[in-house]
Image (cartoon, rainbow, N blue to C red; front, side, top):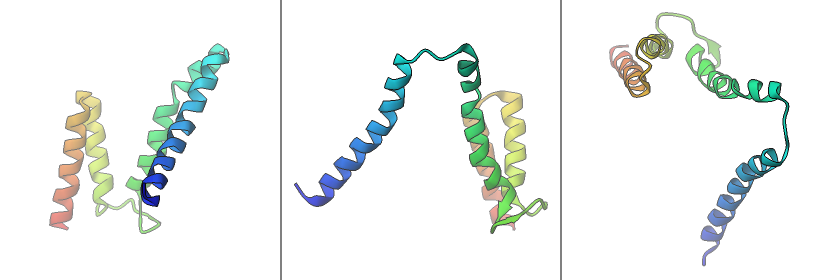
Length: 105
């Protein structure tokens, strides 16, 4: 075995352990109902924290102009998601808008 293989194997084991430990811990601990209710909002909060800066900032500056193709694509994709509830269509429309905007501008 080479050092590269052992490094990759070790990284995989550490990643697996990091994800497994909280799952194992929470199966043994009884949380209050309010904690479970609060956890329902975690995916939306994390997704928002990832997406919003990508839409609103360009070159570390706030970009709220009509020349911000990502923001325009994000708004259009949000409308598509709201109206259709179709994830694949939402991603497709958002990507097409970004590509068209980059080709035009």
